[in-house]
Length: 308
Image (tube, rainbow, N blue to C red; front, side, top):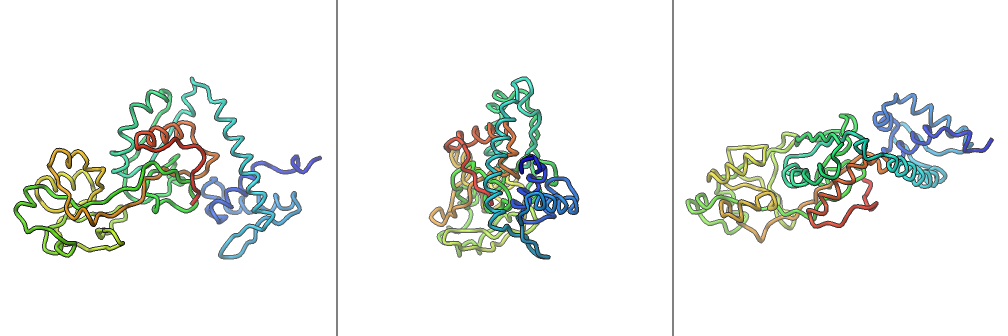
């Protein structure tokens, strides 16, 4: 009997998941197993291979040289298996049937909504569920196939695919507000103005960021967690707002909002689609990513995603 015949592919999958997540506990959660089952699978695999793959301590897990090389080689194999199975997905099957996404509100408005008509045309049999919320979540634990966040908010153990170019954050206000208040010539002038506070998904108040990594806590009695409501309040002349420039492109074009301190605008991370493993990529997810990337002026996604 060959070595391959003695090894359970499920145990290899457990090993790869531990390598990706960096812990037995995280791997167990992702695979829907108990930590003891994960530990038993690793012991069984190492015994059958007669090789030590992981160094374990009470605080960390690290791969041996043998384990690192094995992970690299079998990751390629599982990728090919996943691609082969995806090819068996017939047009009538709806390309795996269902796709569940968790995205934050700006991404829903700027990326998902414009992509929906083309996605529905290309994947008519897919049941797409998009949940819009700004709180940080564990997409694997909560049953989502993928999520969209800014790059620096993506967990390190995830595969992340950029969906857009670098974003620009600007301060904007209605002409009525700007005409009724002192001119804003520097960042320090914000201290004498009414600013619409931005509430993050974790319920913390956001300091406005400007170029050269300057962060400012601005004054203002109104705090809003929703971008659409913030835009409405700004258009009503209630104060200055800190927003994605792309998000208010229509308002800037029609003149209902104007950018101030444009020379101090901060560059922000691109939007990223992220998911737990390259070999688990839903066929329709790749289609959706490519539609979004094309609409955002990006090249099609092949296999250049980063892990972590």
